[in-house]
Image: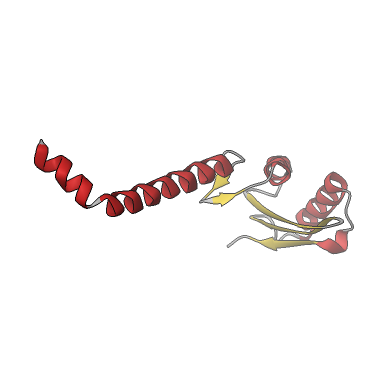
Length: 117
């Protein structure tokens, strides 16, 4: 036991550095976990608006599976990208544009709809 205590005393700086690194790693893990509670898909953090919009779009006939990215600016929403299975159908695209424009109160020119491959 005395050898262990002597070893710790002689290598005190190393233990302090290792301890500090472990604390930093723990803080980063806690912060990432807190961000993940907003909702994740494939490691990506989703806002409440994006999650709600995906849920709404999935309910519209012809849309199928949908993925959404909302880009914010200082003044509000700058743009929205939607990738959905039904994005190659002109009527579905129109329905998606109308739904997103209405739900987010933004101009249709700030919305892009693409077909999912």
